[in-house]
Image (cartoon, rainbow, N blue to C red; front, top):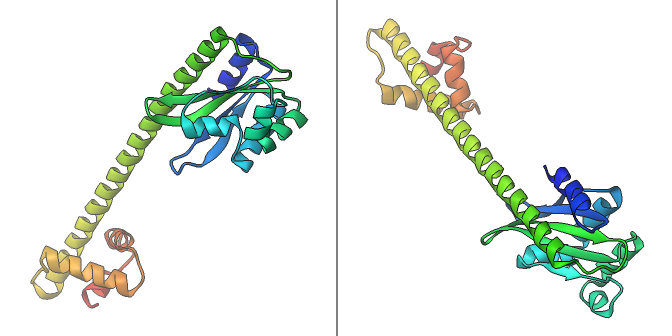
Length: 222
């Protein structure tokens, strides 16, 4: 989707190249897509030096428009980025935030090979494209988080089930040995003690008991 966004910017806007930088959950920046290898390398450079209009856009959540990277203001604000961009063949950089309310998840960078002022129409259309991508990404991330939570809950449930089954195995074995079955709390204590003393995960020990790869008497005898 992000590669398509970069390519659509070239087709729809008066720009030479485009790139997308995203922010992860720890605030780290990474290049997610670009319309060309030159634009990708420039975005990688901006992330590496932690500077440039695109980085400032992520930090502030505001558009950063630079019509000419050789101008004194641009050279003063982003000296390393401006030199790197010009060496890569770009003279203008316009950074549009990928933001939903206060949540800034990245930046859409529009590049031009000559000094270039982004028109109001192109600025609005570019921001609309960035906004649409932002909504899609946030929705995708929300779905991924929900799936992760569901998997964690299912894993916890599965662990609980196998532990309860193992407690039943110990109760049945103790009943066969002494005609008196250990109660659930005692069975759990035996499981936990054996797992700790042998450096095992409790769930792994329980599964081994249920699958009969560990003799229950070993656990009962400590």
